[in-house]
Structure formats: structure tokens, C-alpha cells
Amino acid sequence: MIPKFVRGSIAPVFTAFHEDGRLDDDGQRSILSWLAGTKAVSAFFVRSGMGQMFSFSYEDVRQIAKTVCEHRAGNVPILVGATGIWDRNRDQYPDPEVFMRQAVELSKYAEDMGASGVVHTIPEAVQLVLQAAYMGQGGDIFVLKMGRAVKIRELAEKLILLAGKTPGRDIEIKYIGLREGEKMYEELFNEGESCKSSDHPLIEYAVGTHEIKATWEKSLDEIDEIVHRGDTEALLKYFKKVVENYNPLKN
Image (cartoon, rainbow, N blue to C red; front, side):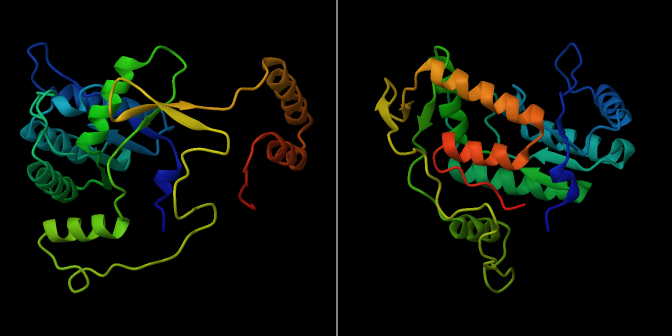
């Protein structure tokens, strides 16, 4: 069952600091209270990656989780970014085992403090995203080579082991099948699309099909007309016509 707040508006929250660089707990509470007062937020996401996610120390993350979860302004659910620590040195790659252990420990701490959930990223992804951001010239689409594909079961088993449990004995892994709209494998390219190398060995440029500008402008005008007409069935039919492999959910 997917929690209701995941379907709503999740607000990434800025972290408050004093002028000397210390975390500002009172300022953090004020931000949360203001956001809760808008009545437009279904959950808070702290240490959310808004520029400084990997600049926090281990104790900083614990302090953020404790302050926010104890305050829980308006009883809004809390998500905590519980990824491991880079110790403010983005050029030095963290040890994978230490990084994962820290993530598990911080996740447990956030849960103990009352967080509704935790969010993880991996250092490989962060490093390549930062590189791609530097390389971009505007309008570029990058494909990041993240290494071998990892099965979800492998990830689940490793997290269970890191938590000091035994997969299949202490924690059962259930296969629930695909839900509507889900697929087993991610397809990076459609027919006619490809990629080309960049100066970085793990970053490639995506090369799509080229369409005449006038063709797309005509399609957008027709979509605009259908939307203003309020004809949902015609809109879905048109999407299927202009977007290859488009397959909307039945409902």
C-alpha cells in the first residue's frame, strides 16, 4: 500500500544555518511551521539534496532528523535523506561499505526519531550528475553509465544483512508482480535513437530523431485545440499517434 502523502505534494526543505555555519534549529522549526501553515504540503523532505546534501557531517544529519521529527509541525509526515557521508570532500570518493553502513545507521536513527520514511542516493550517481551538469551546453540529454545492472532482490538482501538480519528467515522477501503501468526492464532509447561518446568515459550524449520544427508546432497546436475542447479520448488517441510506444494506463 502506497502511503497517501507520497501521492501528494512533498516539499524539499531548505536547511537553516547560523551565520557561523552552525545548524539553526529554531530557524528550521520556523521553516517547517510556515510550510505546514500553507496547508498545501503532504510531507516534508529534509536533507533533500538542495545543493548541500553531501556537505553535512554524520552528526549534522542526526541533528537535522532529531530537530525536524521532534517538531513535526502540523503532524506532517517527514522524509529524511539518509544517504551516507562525503565529509565535505566531494573529490574524495567514499568507501562503499562505510557509505552503506552509515546509510543504514542514519535510516534507523531517523526511524527511531519518528520519520515516516528515508530517501537514499548512491555516490556514483551523484558524482556523474555533477560531471554532466558541468559538461552541459544547453539542451543536452546525457546517459550515465552506472555499471552493471543490480537486481532489486540483491539490494533488498544486502540491506537486510546490513541491518543484522537474515533474508528469508528474519525478513521475508515477497514477489508481488508488476502493477499496471510498470515494466520489468527500463528502455533508454526508442527506435531510431542512439548515443554518442563524450570526453567522459561514463557519460554519453543521447541522440534522438530529428523532426521538422513546423511538424511539431502543428502537433502542439492540435493538442492545444483538443485540450481546450476537453476531449480526453481524442487527446489519448492523438498522443498514441505522435508519440511512439505511448501506452497510457487504462484508468
